Length: 168
Ligand SMILES: [Zn+2]
Image (cartoon, rainbow, N blue to C red; front, top):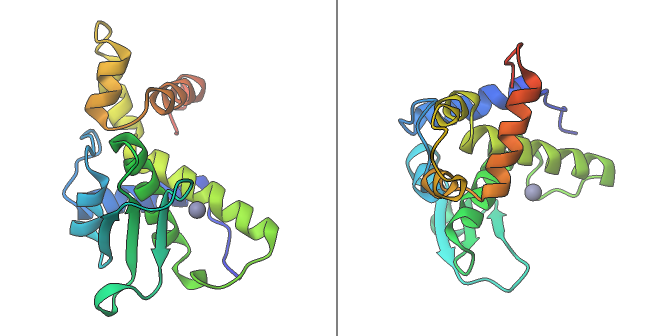
């Protein structure tokens, strides 16, 4: 049974992984596969996978290491999010990988992995630096950050709603 992680714990875990990969809190992660390679022991591969499969985390993959395989057919922003999501499982749920879990627990783990991905790709510090650029086109901003515009919009709305506590 894996313990539920709080939002704060998830944010800390994402920040730690960023630091391990040498990314400052305000720096975009344009290539999440590279971050996964430099800051985890995972074997990271990009292969064309069947439609509908975004990414896989295999507890024992190539070279006797756990493997993260992402669907090479997906556009870069989708690949980045899928990798960040799987990294969330790797960091937060490694005890439970490959073991069946009750549906409620699975749903919680998916939520936690999504939360981790948002914190990893778009931490509050990075969003604040982006907010200062009022004249930039939204789609250009998103491209520069390696995410889909919808994701950036969602995080900026979260940041606005969290103010003035600013505790995203
Ligand atoms: Zn998942």
